[in-house]
Length: 242
Image 1 (cartoon, rainbow, N blue to C red):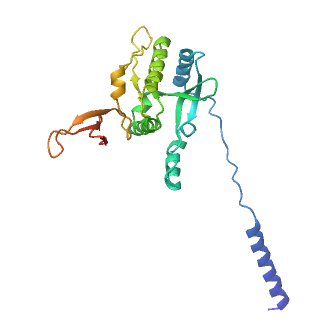
Image 2 (cartoon, one colour; image 1 turned 120 degrees about the vertical axis):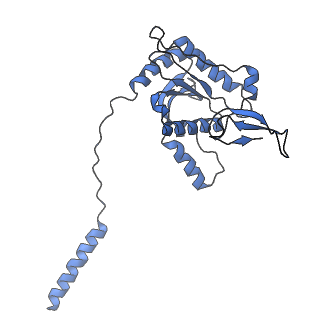
Image 3 (cartoon, rainbow, N blue to C red; image 1 turned 135 degrees about the vertical axis):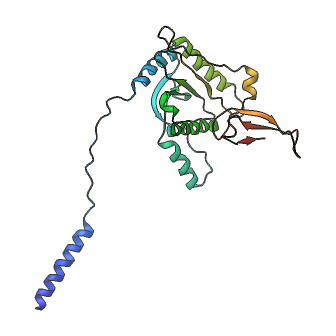
Protein backbone atom coordinates (compact mmCIF):
# COMPACT_ATOMS: atom_id res chain seq x y z
CA UNK A 1 0.00 0.00 0.00
CA UNK A 2 1.25 3.44 -0.84
CA UNK A 3 2.67 5.06 2.32
CA UNK A 4 0.93 8.36 1.57
CA UNK A 5 -2.44 6.59 1.40
CA UNK A 6 -1.71 4.82 4.70
CA UNK A 7 -0.95 8.12 6.42
CA UNK A 8 -4.14 9.55 4.97
CA UNK A 9 -6.24 6.69 6.40
CA UNK A 10 -4.59 7.03 9.83
CA UNK A 11 -5.25 10.78 9.81
CA UNK A 12 -8.90 10.27 8.94
CA UNK A 13 -9.35 7.68 11.71
CA UNK A 14 -7.68 9.93 14.28
CA UNK A 15 -9.80 12.88 13.19
CA UNK A 16 -13.01 10.87 13.60
CA UNK A 17 -11.95 9.59 17.05
CA UNK A 18 -11.08 13.08 18.26
CA UNK A 19 -14.41 14.41 17.03
CA UNK A 20 -16.28 11.68 18.90
CA UNK A 21 -14.33 12.23 22.11
CA UNK A 22 -14.75 15.98 21.97
CA UNK A 23 -18.44 16.04 21.14
CA UNK A 24 -20.98 16.71 23.90
CA UNK A 25 -23.73 14.16 24.53
CA UNK A 26 -26.97 15.04 22.82
CA UNK A 27 -29.58 16.43 25.17
CA UNK A 28 -32.96 14.89 24.59
CA UNK A 29 -35.75 17.36 23.88
CA UNK A 30 -38.38 16.30 26.43
CA UNK A 31 -41.95 17.45 25.99
CA UNK A 32 -44.40 18.28 28.77
CA UNK A 33 -48.00 19.25 29.22
CA UNK A 34 -49.70 21.30 31.92
CA UNK A 35 -51.84 19.56 34.52
CA UNK A 36 -53.99 22.74 34.46
CA UNK A 37 -55.00 22.44 38.11
CA UNK A 38 -52.79 22.38 41.20
CA UNK A 39 -55.51 20.80 43.34
CA UNK A 40 -58.06 18.10 42.67
CA UNK A 41 -61.73 19.03 42.92
CA UNK A 42 -61.92 17.46 46.39
CA UNK A 43 -58.79 19.31 47.53
CA UNK A 44 -60.05 22.61 46.10
CA UNK A 45 -63.38 22.22 47.91
CA UNK A 46 -61.61 21.49 51.20
CA UNK A 47 -59.08 24.29 50.62
CA UNK A 48 -61.90 26.83 50.47
CA UNK A 49 -63.35 25.56 53.74
CA UNK A 50 -59.91 25.44 55.37
CA UNK A 51 -59.13 29.04 54.43
CA UNK A 52 -62.47 30.14 55.90
CA UNK A 53 -61.87 28.15 59.08
CA UNK A 54 -58.39 29.60 59.57
CA UNK A 55 -59.45 33.14 58.71
CA UNK A 56 -56.77 35.76 59.42
CA UNK A 57 -55.06 33.69 62.07
CA UNK A 58 -52.62 31.91 59.72
CA UNK A 59 -51.49 31.36 56.15
CA UNK A 60 -52.56 28.22 54.31
CA UNK A 61 -50.13 26.65 51.82
CA UNK A 62 -51.04 23.78 49.50
CA UNK A 63 -48.94 20.91 48.16
CA UNK A 64 -45.97 21.53 50.44
CA UNK A 65 -43.02 19.18 50.02
CA UNK A 66 -42.46 17.27 53.27
CA UNK A 67 -38.70 17.81 52.89
CA UNK A 68 -39.36 21.55 53.26
CA UNK A 69 -41.00 20.89 56.63
CA UNK A 70 -39.15 17.88 58.03
CA UNK A 71 -35.43 17.20 57.61
CA UNK A 72 -33.29 14.32 58.90
CA UNK A 73 -31.67 14.98 62.26
CA UNK A 74 -28.03 16.01 62.33
CA UNK A 75 -25.43 13.48 63.42
CA UNK A 76 -26.33 10.78 60.89
CA UNK A 77 -23.67 9.50 58.56
CA UNK A 78 -24.00 10.82 55.02
CA UNK A 79 -25.54 7.64 53.59
CA UNK A 80 -28.28 7.33 56.22
CA UNK A 81 -29.01 11.06 56.04
CA UNK A 82 -29.48 10.82 52.27
CA UNK A 83 -31.73 7.79 52.63
CA UNK A 84 -33.85 9.56 55.22
CA UNK A 85 -34.05 12.65 53.01
CA UNK A 86 -35.04 10.59 49.96
CA UNK A 87 -37.94 9.12 51.95
CA UNK A 88 -39.55 12.54 52.31
CA UNK A 89 -38.29 14.39 49.23
CA UNK A 90 -40.87 12.84 46.91
CA UNK A 91 -43.84 13.26 49.29
CA UNK A 92 -45.90 16.29 50.19
CA UNK A 93 -48.43 17.51 52.73
CA UNK A 94 -51.78 18.46 51.26
CA UNK A 95 -51.81 21.67 53.30
CA UNK A 96 -49.61 23.41 55.87
CA UNK A 97 -50.61 26.21 58.23
CA UNK A 98 -47.98 28.86 59.03
CA UNK A 99 -47.81 31.97 61.17
CA UNK A 100 -48.44 35.13 59.14
CA UNK A 101 -45.55 37.09 60.66
CA UNK A 102 -42.64 34.76 59.97
CA UNK A 103 -44.09 31.70 58.18
CA UNK A 104 -43.12 29.51 61.11
CA UNK A 105 -44.82 26.12 61.00
CA UNK A 106 -48.06 25.52 62.91
CA UNK A 107 -49.83 22.45 61.62
CA UNK A 108 -49.92 19.98 58.75
CA UNK A 109 -53.31 18.98 57.32
CA UNK A 110 -53.96 15.86 55.24
CA UNK A 111 -57.20 15.31 53.32
CA UNK A 112 -57.87 11.56 53.26
CA UNK A 113 -60.13 10.42 50.45
CA UNK A 114 -60.87 6.90 49.16
CA UNK A 115 -57.41 6.70 47.56
CA UNK A 116 -55.99 6.39 51.07
CA UNK A 117 -57.70 3.03 51.49
CA UNK A 118 -55.13 1.18 49.38
CA UNK A 119 -52.34 -0.73 51.10
CA UNK A 120 -49.66 1.41 49.47
CA UNK A 121 -51.37 4.63 50.56
CA UNK A 122 -51.81 3.34 54.11
CA UNK A 123 -48.11 2.48 54.29
CA UNK A 124 -47.32 5.97 53.06
CA UNK A 125 -49.65 7.50 55.67
CA UNK A 126 -48.08 5.44 58.47
CA UNK A 127 -44.63 6.64 57.46
CA UNK A 128 -45.77 10.27 57.36
CA UNK A 129 -47.43 9.90 60.76
CA UNK A 130 -44.25 8.42 62.20
CA UNK A 131 -42.05 11.11 60.65
CA UNK A 132 -44.26 13.87 62.08
CA UNK A 133 -44.29 12.23 65.51
CA UNK A 134 -40.50 11.94 65.57
CA UNK A 135 -40.16 15.63 64.66
CA UNK A 136 -42.82 16.84 67.09
CA UNK A 137 -44.85 18.30 64.21
CA UNK A 138 -48.61 18.11 64.65
CA UNK A 139 -50.63 16.58 61.83
CA UNK A 140 -54.40 16.75 61.41
CA UNK A 141 -56.12 14.21 59.15
CA UNK A 142 -59.57 15.00 57.79
CA UNK A 143 -61.82 12.62 55.89
CA UNK A 144 -62.87 14.04 52.53
CA UNK A 145 -66.54 15.04 52.38
CA UNK A 146 -69.00 16.69 50.00
CA UNK A 147 -69.17 19.75 52.25
CA UNK A 148 -67.71 20.96 55.53
CA UNK A 149 -69.07 22.74 58.57
CA UNK A 150 -66.69 25.68 59.00
CA UNK A 151 -67.26 26.00 62.76
CA UNK A 152 -66.50 22.30 63.31
CA UNK A 153 -63.43 22.47 61.10
CA UNK A 154 -62.20 25.54 62.98
CA UNK A 155 -62.61 23.69 66.28
CA UNK A 156 -60.70 20.66 64.97
CA UNK A 157 -57.80 22.91 64.01
CA UNK A 158 -57.81 24.65 67.39
CA UNK A 159 -57.87 21.30 69.20
CA UNK A 160 -54.99 19.95 67.11
CA UNK A 161 -52.88 23.05 67.77
CA UNK A 162 -53.66 23.29 71.48
CA UNK A 163 -53.06 19.56 71.96
CA UNK A 164 -49.67 19.85 70.31
CA UNK A 165 -48.80 22.88 72.46
CA UNK A 166 -49.48 20.91 75.65
CA UNK A 167 -47.25 17.96 74.73
CA UNK A 168 -44.03 17.65 76.71
CA UNK A 169 -40.66 16.14 75.79
CA UNK A 170 -41.10 16.63 72.07
CA UNK A 171 -43.94 14.12 71.72
CA UNK A 172 -46.79 14.97 69.42
CA UNK A 173 -50.42 13.98 69.18
CA UNK A 174 -51.67 13.35 65.67
CA UNK A 175 -55.20 14.66 65.76
CA UNK A 176 -57.87 11.92 65.57
CA UNK A 177 -59.56 11.46 62.21
CA UNK A 178 -62.73 13.42 61.50
CA UNK A 179 -65.40 11.35 59.82
CA UNK A 180 -68.09 12.67 57.54
CA UNK A 181 -71.73 11.81 57.05
CA UNK A 182 -73.08 13.05 53.73
CA UNK A 183 -76.67 12.02 54.50
CA UNK A 184 -77.55 14.94 56.76
CA UNK A 185 -79.13 17.68 54.66
CA UNK A 186 -76.41 17.16 52.05
CA UNK A 187 -73.92 18.62 54.50
CA UNK A 188 -71.09 16.48 55.85
CA UNK A 189 -70.82 16.86 59.60
CA UNK A 190 -67.32 16.69 61.05
CA UNK A 191 -67.03 14.95 64.42
CA UNK A 192 -63.97 14.41 66.54
CA UNK A 193 -62.77 12.88 69.75
CA UNK A 194 -60.97 15.52 71.81
CA UNK A 195 -58.54 14.25 74.45
CA UNK A 196 -58.85 15.68 77.90
CA UNK A 197 -55.73 17.06 79.63
CA UNK A 198 -54.92 13.90 81.60
CA UNK A 199 -55.14 11.78 78.47
CA UNK A 200 -52.85 14.15 76.56
CA UNK A 201 -50.22 14.02 79.28
CA UNK A 202 -50.03 10.23 79.17
CA UNK A 203 -50.56 9.60 75.47
CA UNK A 204 -47.58 8.33 73.50
CA UNK A 205 -47.26 7.88 69.75
CA UNK A 206 -45.57 4.88 68.18
CA UNK A 207 -42.31 6.08 66.57
CA UNK A 208 -42.63 3.40 63.87
CA UNK A 209 -46.20 3.68 62.60
CA UNK A 210 -47.66 6.77 64.30
CA UNK A 211 -50.45 4.88 66.09
CA UNK A 212 -51.20 5.52 69.80
CA UNK A 213 -49.18 3.51 72.32
CA UNK A 214 -50.98 1.56 75.07
CA UNK A 215 -49.63 1.04 78.60
CA UNK A 216 -49.42 -2.72 79.26
CA UNK A 217 -48.20 -4.97 82.08
CA UNK A 218 -46.18 -8.17 81.74
CA UNK A 219 -48.34 -10.95 83.24
CA UNK A 220 -45.84 -13.81 83.49
CA UNK A 221 -42.17 -14.66 83.46
CA UNK A 222 -39.23 -13.00 85.18
CA UNK A 223 -40.53 -9.55 84.21
CA UNK A 224 -44.05 -10.10 85.57
CA UNK A 225 -45.55 -6.83 86.80
CA UNK A 226 -43.27 -4.71 84.64
CA UNK A 227 -45.10 -1.97 82.72
CA UNK A 228 -44.27 -1.04 79.15
CA UNK A 229 -45.77 0.86 76.22
CA UNK A 230 -46.89 -1.30 73.31
CA UNK A 231 -48.24 -0.18 69.96
CA UNK A 232 -52.04 -0.31 69.74
CA UNK A 233 -51.79 -1.82 66.26
CA UNK A 234 -50.09 -4.99 67.60
CA UNK A 235 -49.46 -7.54 66.06
CA UNK A 236 -49.19 -5.49 62.85
CA UNK A 237 -46.65 -3.28 64.61
CA UNK A 238 -44.56 -4.75 67.46
CA UNK A 239 -42.91 -1.55 68.66
CA UNK A 240 -42.30 -1.50 72.46
CA UNK A 241 -41.16 1.40 74.67
CA UNK A 242 -40.17 1.19 78.34
